Amino acid sequence: MASVDAVAAVGRVLVDPGCDLPRRFRALFTLKNLGGADAIEWIGRAFGDGSALLKHELAYCLGQMQDPRAIPTLTAVLRDTGQEPMVRHEAGEALGAIGDPAVLDLLKEYSQDPVVEVAETCQLALRRLEWLQASEKLPAEDGVEENPYCSVDPAPAAARRSVPELRLSLLDESLPLFERYRAMFALRNHGSEEAVRALGAGLQCSSALFRHEIAYVLGQMQHPAAVSDLCATLESCSENPMVRHEAAEALGAIGKQECLSVLQRYQQDGERVVKESCQVALDMLEYENSQQFQYADALLRLPA
Image (cartoon, rainbow, N blue to C red):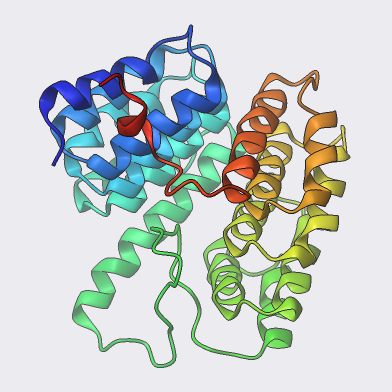
């Protein structure tokens, strides 16, 4: 357990706009891992920052912590129409990740938000909460595998099926988004190159929210077969910046040498969120190819 002073020292790095973004990201993930009320308070303070990328990641981390004490902060972010859509979307997803039924009415309200990414996110979060409530009363679904990535996902993986069957569900835009997400996470858990190829096809689907989540899971898988699809997504200037940003971070997580040149090329992109994502991704790529013990190392970087 870190002391209150140590948490505060890491928190000050997070909220310091004078620190470079990769260092602030490492501070954020250190706070996420430490957990507790003080860490949540420091993360909440950073929502006044000018970086949509950082604020998006703040919300993500609060959701992954699954601590109900973060609900008031996330509610305020979701309600704040002055925040960027990708930040509000992530706040809605985080509220679903925490899993507290107290936010059901809030999610129902914002399921009709005029920003489509926010509305779709809240619809998914609502379905996740309803699924959690139902799963407490029903027997466990047969064939559903444990998530090997230890992340809190917007939807549970679908029951075990073949990759071609899951691919059909993934790409069927007549199905509810929640069911397609379930197929997505089942493909991720499958982990094969065939599954990576199926997920890559999802980068052509119509929903930007869906495409962004595809890029995220490809980054989790860290499979080199995903590199070409992710590069094409990052390189497409007509693509939604939220999707391009996620493709950049996924390339950094994969960490292969062929990811380096494309990330370097786009670290001065005209879209701030893409530019910053490439900077953070380059730091992640360096970490993936180093002997560093852990990425969330802000405690180790504090002055002795």
